[in-house]
Length: 385
Image 1 (tube, one colour):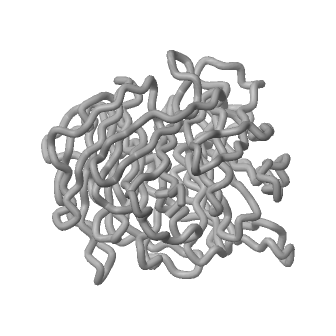
Image 2: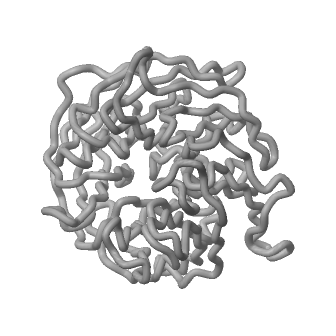
């Protein structure tokens, strides 16, 4: 498995675990402090040990995605940020990657055609890259853009940018559209764009043969979520029949039945324990490699990983446990392809923890290994073989 982001897993497929159990671990960061960009480590799945290898300078690579051949890495350059001018656009940077040496080589950069790009995905056919432009500015507002991928790994200029209109009831957070993720369906026929600002999950038909345009809205156009909930990240389960959504502002996880571009809401569960009164902020969501569990990070005052067991009969989730991230703002995390480890970064604490995971119960063991990295955000594992 090249990238362990669940929304890409179906496109990249599973691969045999390396004989030595060692993967390349890529860490994307925010670079406003001591961090310089993307960091590469060797990750030993037998011991959980992490060894530094190399790094590549680039601005705010807060989300990464890896090509199916493991030879190219793409990163957002999340600009302008909360205090930047609305006229400044973010970027998408392409890197060549040598899995054997763990070295990244800069190839090129293009405009993201929006503010604050925060998510990337590669189409299942490998032809296009999409990014979500969150946009803290009201003008131009949230959008997503589509970029062709060149044979040499470079990313081409955007061929399509789609802007969403509207907002939600929460002033200051939902004054305009905020696209937070772009996820292709397991069948490769649809793209879902999660919009925190409008409380909608938009659906687009993907037709790369040009018969109906590259992307066009489906008949239903979108799935409306609870007002003020703030949909953020969507992943599909192992069977492809169910999908799971984090709603950032409500701190909930939703379960959907998926059928030919349509999402039907089945269940909504809170991430917090009964009686919790602090701030919340649902973020990342990933299934375990065997599909038996779903994990969600919750920030705010909770700062934990919430563990859910999956009912294979109907896709429903049942809370199985909570684990403190041992720091502040666990924005992203990753589960290694063997299912033995969960790696989580605390963005505001400059720490990464490697938790041993019990594949049978889904729970995370105490006393994790610690790595010090400034503003860690995203994690991708790559097989060097």
